[in-house]
Length: 320
Ligand code: NAD
Ligand code: UDP
Image (cartoon, rainbow, N blue to C red):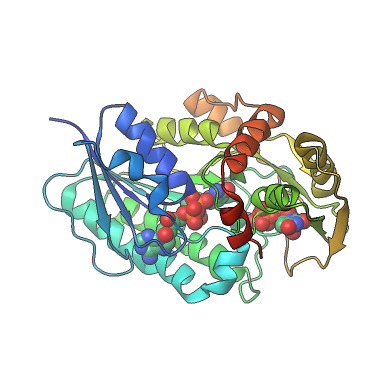
């Protein structure tokens, strides 16, 4: 009998790539989503497979799955600042109530649960690069607090179930990840810059662009998550690419890659936008034998190829 895995947020960017990976590994995959930020197009190629089922469901309400379940990946949550500022209550609920429901389901089924946490638990970090031991610097009542605190609560309740109910749990702290199937208008910097380049608009850098990020290609991220799920380590693990760049330099790279003749323009920096971010991945290297393989040049090229396949219609519709 095939191992059975439930993946929440399956129609989203990361969830859909995880569905592909677990199908490829021979699992029976149940994808669950309410499509609040996702798109069925990301998983429609799986609908013809016997190994795949799709449940349209909001995980903030009671989650039921018939039969046995071996693993659960909880990836449902708005993930871009634009999304979670637009739907702050749903963001808090899916991290809190949604996680509680999935922990309950995992306990009921005796399944192992992996939750998608984030580098945002470190807030605007005062320690650089960020190790898993750093407690973070988060503004609980700022606009980003709805996401950061939901994820921090998610980690706490997961560890409580781990300790109190001896549930098998895993926590991945994901750092900025990109690739095909990101939504063009989700507001994150890569779709934003690529969409602008394709529409012939100037690239909007927020603030003076001296803030940094470290971008991880989706295939590397999925490999890290896969290894963590199957490992026996239950404390948080950073998965990301430590190659750090300022947003200003990054905009220049995108201009070169896309061949756009547009220029960079500067806009206000959003409140509490972290000034620096780089994962310390020593733990992932040591425990999982994992490190990223895809460099930014190759990853960005593949991502741009994907965005180029979108129609002019899509491009117009997704301008913001
Ligand atoms: P995404 O918006 O593409 O996917 C999220 C999916 O969750 C969407 O399909 C959405 O419809 C679904 N969803 C949201 N609320 C739901 C609910 N209540 N019930 C059912 N489905 C719901 O975002 P993503 O980039 O794929 O992120 C996936 C997960 O990874 C999120 O938990 C996010 O916090 C985490 N993460 C992602 C990144 C990244 O760089 N992509 C970084 C850190 C953490
Ligand atoms: N950013 C930008 N222009 C944009 C979108 C984002 O300069 O059009 C900046 C944003 O202020 C942040 C960085 O790019 O400093 C990464 O933003 P993103 O939303 O991708 O992710 P996060 O802030 O969650 O890391």
